Amino acid sequence: MKKLAIIGCGGIGGYHLSHFLGFSDIELAGFCDLIPQRAESFVKQANSGKAFTDFREMYDAVEPDMVFICVPPTCHGDIEMETIRRRIPFFVEKPLSLDLELARQIRDEVKKAGLITASGFQCRYSNLVKPNVKFIKDNEVAFIDCIRIGGVPETPWWKEKSLSGGQIVEQTIHQFDIIRYVFDEPEMVFTLGAKGFVKGISGYDTDDLSTTVVRFHSGALATISTGCYAKSGEAADSKVVFSAKDGRAELRILNDLKILGCRNSSEDPGKVDKRSKGLVVQGDGTMTSSGSGEVVFKEEGDAGILCDRTFIDAAVTGDGSRIRSPYEDALRSLEFTLACNQSMETGLPVKIENR
Image 1 (spheres, helix red, strand yellow):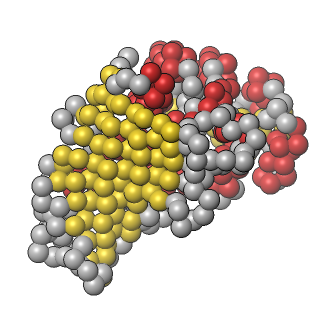
Image 2: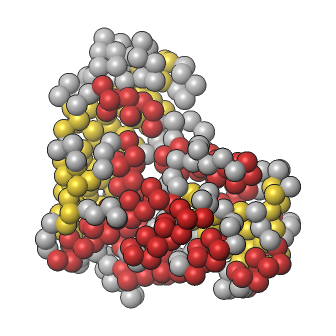
């Protein structure tokens, strides 16, 4: 049985641990965190493994076959380089780093080692991706409008932009990433930010909201707006709209995809066309009437579990071909979002450099 280790036993580490507890074919062998009680808590939850405060000591003692790196954005670098040196396949949570050059160095070392890697972009594993890509393929998308409005996370380091990267890099990167994944690579961004709407949080030092204008290599444009000022669920919102000449696709990530007034948009081109509106398409292909003039694809399964399982299977078999978010590709989403931060700081458009 292959051995798995986790570095970083906070909230996101716990998210992945909850998935691992349902897998019977791996040994949860080691848990590492600078706060001993956190690592010990994971040992109790897993009913297996050992707790450590030093990842190198854990590597020496456990000799894991794979590792999940779930640390804050500023803690990357030494962990990845040592993991690569030991030829251990690794899954790293987003953002990969706040230091772009460091992330590029890690990418280069991964390529030299031929190592299997993955990153925490679970939205790529949603069953909504295929019909979304089909819509884009069959309809000339000219404009994308994206919004993500939420609140301020309770994680202490999140409220300091120098530690988290701010909302674009730490949270809304999922929206930036899925747009890249299903649509096109960005060429240039221009971002404006604003402050003064979030009040009463000690030590808070990041942008409350921002809007980014994106130009893609295809010539299409997008606006991506994000904010962390919402205090209630009614104020929160998350949607990506792909607009074409004959219709549009409205994606609520990990929820549903609505197709309105378009040509073929199902995985099977014969199933759904311009004349067969008013359908709800389940993940297994089952269709029922929606009572409206739209085609609705519903989220099925758990994309997060599938994301984790795909990496684990790759680490076991040595075949990474089914991983949808390897380190090298995840780096492009980091470049995308850090360019937005640069634009916000300088007040100037920034050309994306994928180096």
